[in-house]
Length: 115
Image (cartoon, rainbow, N blue to C red; front, top):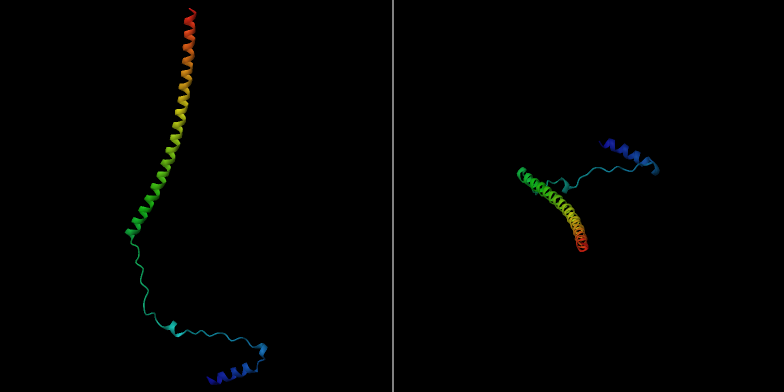
C-alpha cells in the first residue's frame, strides 16, 4: 500500500501550484454522532377514533347550529320589515277611509240642512 502512496505523493509535488485541484473533503462523523441516544423521545399517544369522531361530531353540530341560527335571524329580520311595511300601509288605508267617511258625513249633513 505504501508503494501506491509514494507515487501519488510525488505526482502531487511535481504539479505546478496553479494546476492543483482542491482536495475533496472526506466524510467523517464525530464521536457524539456515532453514539446511540440514551433517552428515547416520549411517544405521542394517538387520538382514538372515538374521541376524534366525537370531536368532529361536536364541531360539525356547532357549525351547523351557528349557520342555522344566523339564517333564522336573517329571515326574522326580513319578515319583521315586511310586517312593519304592511302595518304602515294598513294605517294609511285606514286613515284614507276615515277621511273619506268624514267627507261623506259632511255631505250628508249639508244635504239634510238643505231640506
